[in-house]
Length: 147
Image (cartoon, rainbow, N blue to C red; front, top):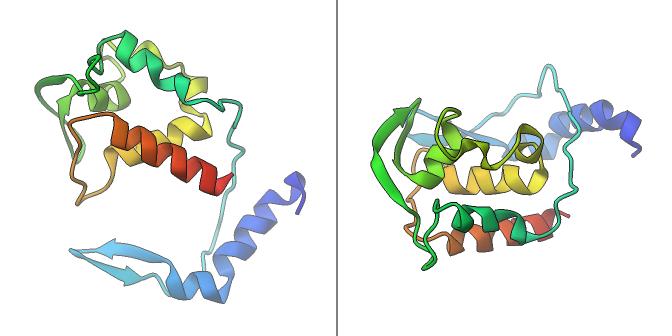
């Protein structure tokens, strides 16, 4: 596989019988197998230049996370399907929040940040953590497993 073949690779991957028979989605309140091949697939390059977890130190330096590792709380706000009750989720989701600018758009595009973003926000049944360390640990492990 060569980088110029990324679209073919992604399309072939999403049409593979093993993927089709195992790829699941949430339907109502339960997981179901998608069961059909993708009709179109788009692949985009994701920068992987950030290699150190010190990338997230600015969360503590700017009081999104306290020195103790506890995530700073805030009054509840709503953004789409998310209830935002802490400064971390506010920084991740609300572009006019005080801390959104801690990470530039190009930094938010980084693979490490994308993993962190999805780990922190989770999904429909996510149970949020009060401390940052579990998010950092899982982000690091997922990154290492994928790279």
